[in-house]
Image (cartoon, rainbow, N blue to C red):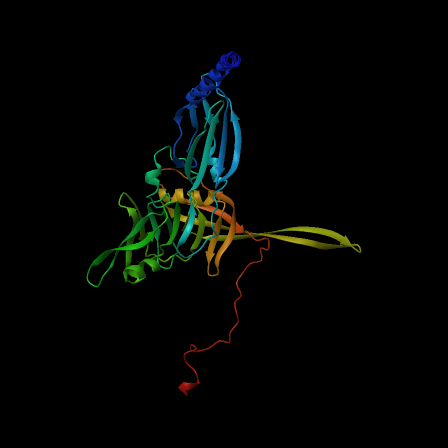
Length: 388
């Protein structure tokens, strides 16, 4: 008596079980087709993430360091395609750069973003960790990520330096930086190759002090004997520093974050012209005109001197940087670029020169160095009363 109702009840449930089972099966086979979803890329040219065969909306979630930073719904176009744009630019918001330092050390790192794409009715999202390398210049795909990891982080591969100057260059880690230097010997020119630095972490890039004085110490010669030196992690990507033996009366070294987010320097060898201007406010007190405030704009205009085509790109990075310092005897002084003259004829037989104006970033523009007054002496301090 009790079997028939149970049998009927089972027959009654069968359609629902069928729908649940095959409904879930249907949900599993719904998949988007990946058209473009790179694992890594430069921030300026990472491009769009593209999926086709999308039948419903897609919920996109982007996380950095495990923290969601973006959540949006994307509706496919009539062809069933969605495009997720701006991942490279979004990643750069979370790029942090260190303060300028003279010593070797970690200078920055690539940004890893986790992109999760969940299509409507799909059981599981498409998830990928994407490595974004900081770079504000679009190289039009000519600099793939695997090549990027082995290059010196500068837009110039031939730089001019001189005795007493300060130079920095950065490389991504996971490799050993080799140094090849040519220098003057007693009877003939000599050369030497040494391991300059071992960089451990491939996800980070490292700042290296490659000033002539540091290089001379590394190979055991006098700084004035250096002719040129190369630095590289791959023989396919070498940066060369060539010594300039000329003595320039005016030299100003600027340190900045270049297009790769790395610390770099450039020394201007042209003239510098100060331009001080006060903005004054006046009032009247007891029928007398008095000065209420005097705001000094202490601006300096400096010339790069004659430069090469590659130097032009380095200067472009300097003028485009949001972090620039003047390096003087007191260390790194924050400055702000206020104006520039960056027009010239792009001909090989035309000398190129760029000039720009800057001021110190601090609000107090009365900035100088204290010079102590000392009683004049005929002889130096080495001559004392013991000679009597």
